[in-house]
Image (cartoon, protein in one colour):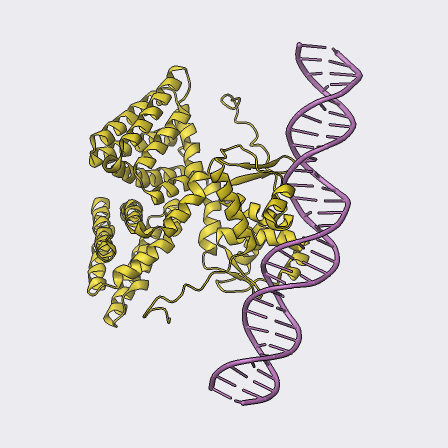
Length: 237
Length: 237
DNA sequence: ATTGTCCTATTGGCTAGGCCACTGAGCCAG
DNA sequence: CTGGCTCAGTGGCCTAGCCAATAGGACAAT
């Protein structure tokens, strides 16, 4: 891994596919013109011409918007705006671009993971416990070898999430996975942090093994708080 | 609304677009053949031929899978499977199709909304409180008029979520919005339920107004539990 | 040996143009 | 007023083709 040191590198200049631009423009256009749920978009042929792309490309853009839930394409009738427009796209962007999103991420992790820990304490199987131990061992080895234990951290939380046996919670954790990953990197970059983090994980694991949901929840809460402290120190405004 | 009574009607036989089927098949194929993150899919031309569709359609399918985060399409190189495959698609389906998803929804609501309530108690503005009161009044009027207070319930939870001033949590709530809506309908369909629900809302609102996060959290927890009881009674297996 | 340059096969990106299928609205007969 | 018909509008999908990016090998320069 070469990105482990120094400056974080220009972020790999992203290559936009045409359909993405088109989808963005359409989405923006919907917002700007104040289109409400149920309003119709112009026909594909016209829209394609206006945007200067082929119908095939436009079609891809519509697929993308459809998957995200912004529009609904109805064969023979037209393309209509759905209710979810405002909630979906905008907010994701807002979160991505806003600098002080860290507290929000911490809050959300706290909400989800304390619950997950509590559930895990009650539902964990032997297999779950083994996986958690593996992650712990992996992290320990990594840290002793001078690493930051990033992957071990990820594995641990993944294992705990799996142990909660809740597909929905797992999905939501996955949803915010990318955001969490960033905070993880920041947190574990602090000197001494990996060890503290490892200790926190051990406490969580113990509580889960003991089958004590309250303790597991509390331990997880403390752990998330610790991460938060670190992040806030560096990022305070 | 005509779907409020009687048998639930044949569920409107959905019309699949070709790209959806293709996306599904590809996704399944990835799973069946045990493809891991980083593995390459066959080239588009070949894949299209094998699946018996045009390249344009296949391309749409890939866009859909890309938006969902299952694959990454790299110009000039190929299409590769991303790490998120397992978590994403399967789980959504599993949740949608699994009958006993109610407990999971309750758990998730509990995790998110207790936190939301606590945050709301600390952060609510006068405007937030007014909106919460509006929702309360709306629900009360609806119930007195013989309604079930479904929309009021929705508004109330929306207002509380807004009062938490956390975009991320709001987004996750939105994410599970559809699922929650179903449970809401079931719950409020019980005789006497609307009144109880209204009382629960009042308790939550009071705690938020008082600025007491613990009380707000506890009240919300109690409320969610109540909903859960109802749901489980009808749906127990 | 190593490094940098160029070439080329492979692969995705996008377009053009066309036919088919579905939807909704208006018309007409019963 | 109802049911069936027609037709214009619109999306669904296809074929055929050229353009553009990438990876990897050959080969020259160091």
